Image (cartoon, rainbow, N blue to C red; front, side, top):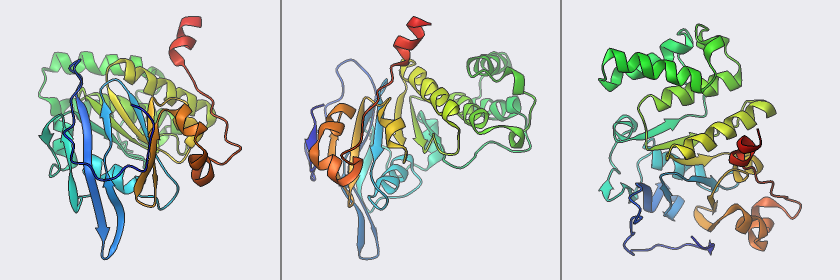
Length: 272
């Protein structure tokens, strides 16, 4: 998608990808609190197999837009679609049943349950056979390098271990999309890169990722596209390179000293 500034309300029909990938999209979302409009006609989309950022300064409406997309907040106007299926009225649990996972900013592990029981508790909701659940559990523990802490309780985990457990648990339902709310908050720099690598692998699994995070450098370093909200509207959308090069984006959000540092974990894996 080409870079675009000052997106306004649109009634144009959205065309689904010809390659069969599913799309999670919003159409002209509006949210008001009393007489104050905090989100005005925000339309975004995330395709399977891509990482999309939802960015903006405090008070820009990005968190409200994100929460409407996840089902935590009901919009006053507009719609949320999974392909052409209107899921605007679906609560979070029903969106999960339709393949949309959500990872909250706050710790969501069950603190008094072990890592493996945290994951198993979600697998039990899938109605899969016990054999499948056991195999899936072992696969997720291995994939997210949780073998050494699998018996540890949730409240004994480091920030990075907790995040890996939460993502593994989210994958137990085999989602088509995952909404990541501040995934880099509260973790050390090494864990941040670890999480970025995990997100990249989710993309390789053909999972669509929507990230909102105040850490703009770490977010833009791995996203394919990003939307920048300002005063409740989409100010700009495009690739990280297009955002970083745009004068208005720099003036209102990134600052003139911002330097984009892209990361390619696929190339890193090839070298390793």
